[in-house]
Length: 125
Image (cartoon, rainbow, N blue to C red; front, side, top):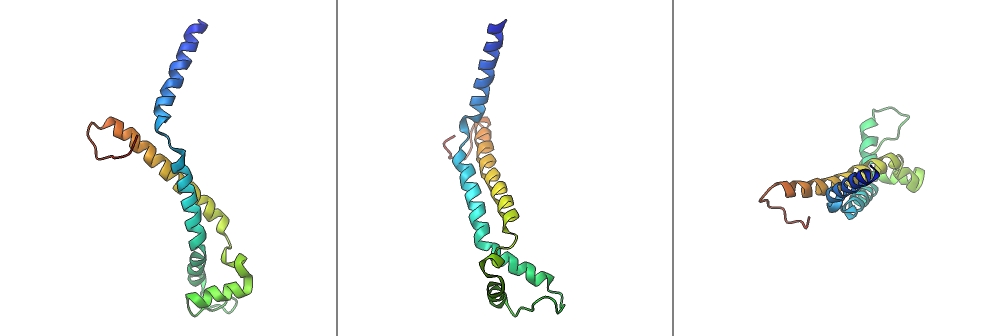
């Protein structure tokens, strides 16, 4: 009876190994790093967009004449920390979403490639 259970677990593990044979963790790392780096590069511009959106004419908030004026004002008042206010949730979201996108897109693409007799996929699945 124990021999049958061991045979089932061995075949079960081989089934999982055939499914995950095409998994490339490099794709996950590439997606996470791309999402994080793009967010770090563009977050100050996103902050400027938000500052313009909430500028409703109240005297409490500073008035900006343009993008460069807004960036220099934030830099003078708060420094580098001011340009990256609220970047942490954005980095988590972008890293996770792009990492999973690259990981699952190529993983599912390889599985699809195995099901289609002729396809234009040129990946080494």
